[in-house]
Image (cartoon, rainbow, N blue to C red; front, side, top):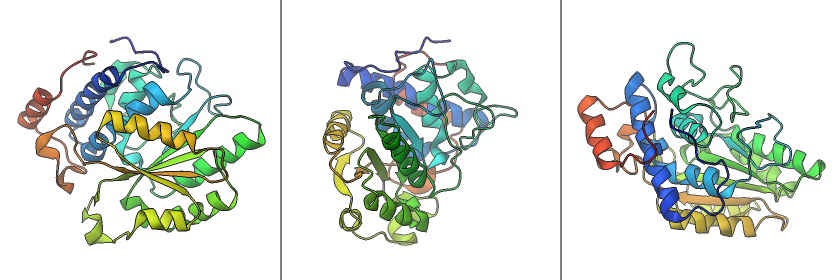
Length: 291
C-alpha cells in the first residue's frame, strides 16, 4: 500500500497538489473500470476541487476521525454518485488504506456506489445517494458549530443538475435567513447531467443572480485550474463570518483530464473498457503509486 500524504498540507505548492490530482484521476478510472460500474465524468471534473480541499484548504484529522468533527472543518458530499473521487481523496489523505480502493462497488465493500454510513467508513458522515439533501445537512452542521462556539467551517459540494431539486432552494432560504456565515457551498457547474445538457433537461437560468437573490454571497471560479481553485477557496474563506453563507459557482468540464470523456454527458455513468482505460492512464501520470 502506498503511504498517504499528510491529511492537512497547508504549505503544499500548486505543483504538488496537481501531482496528487493526477493520481486521484488514475484511481477514478481504475476503480470504475474494475467493477464496470460507477460515475467517472463528474468525479474527474471535481478532482481538483476535492484534492485542493483535503490537501490544502480544510483543517481536518484523518487519523482521529469522529462523526461530530468538533474542532475541525467538515465536508459533505451532496452529489454522492461521484463517490470514486471522494473515496480516492479520503484514502490518499489517510482516512483508510489505499488498497481498499480496489473493492469499489464490490460485494461486502465499504466503498458503496453512493457513500453510506452503516459500514463506518472513516471520512463519511452522511449517506448521500438521494440528491438535494446535502445543503440542508451542511446548514445544520454549520449552525451546530455556531451553537458550540466552534470556529471551524463547513463545506458542501453539489451538482448543477441537483439544483433542480426543490429541497435545495428551501435550504437556500434557511441558510441566508439564519445567517449561516460559516458555510461554503459549491456547485459543480458543468452544464451536464445523466440525461443530457442541463439546459435541455431543466434550464436553471442565471444561477449567480438566483443565489444572490436568495441572500447568499456568490463568487465564481474555474474548477479545472488548480491555481484558480486555490485562489477561489481563499476568496470564499475571506467572505465567511460576514452574515451570509457563501456560494461558489464552479465551472468544470465533465471528464476533465481524459480527452475522450470531455465535452459530453455520455460519461456521466458508464465505465471504460480495457482499451479506453489504457488510453486514459496514458494521459494521467502515476505520481503516488497505484493501489
